[in-house]
Amino acid sequence: QLGLFYKKLLKSGFFNHGILVIVGDHHVMVPLKHAEIKKFGTARALARTPLVISFGDQGGAIENLPFQQVDLCNSVKNLISDKQCTSEWVGDLLALPRFHAQYIVYRHGDRRDLITVFYGDRELSIKLDGDKTRILNQGDLDNSIAELILNKINRERIVNQIKNN
Image 1 (cartoon, rainbow, N blue to C red):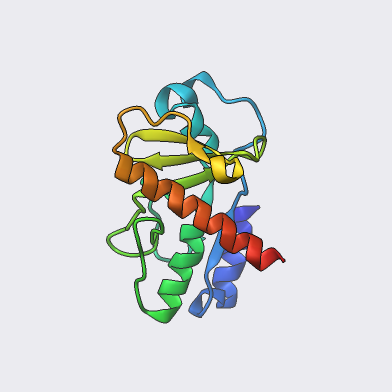
Image 2 (spheres, helix red, strand yellow):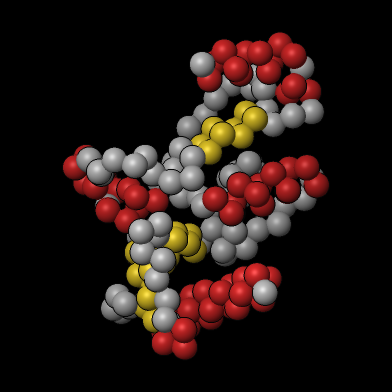
């Protein structure tokens, strides 16, 4: 059905000025498979979300760099403004070459008090607890990086709280 939908869009001229974006809002709601856990680790496997982007008849590519949903909005904004605005927290999955953020933030749907930050090959568990927000598994992570992560998360929480009031 997706293929038929795509072909109708292509035939109608939609892609002359349109972009097709299909994204799930979470991992499929079934238990993780052993192969997924082995390949990605539990947290990364849970964070994987299917995404399809099409500009039309341009061929296809599979991208396996880590991205986050906020990167999608940023990527489309960059594409239509013909600028590239990225940071260590926000990537651009439509740029060539692709730019993935250094810090990928994953909010758990089942644990609203827990955030995972993917940083390189590390998975940092952040406990959201007001002034006591902390990294649960800091280990040998440099204190300046831990402070940067916590400050960013706390800033975003404050900004979102202000927006919602």
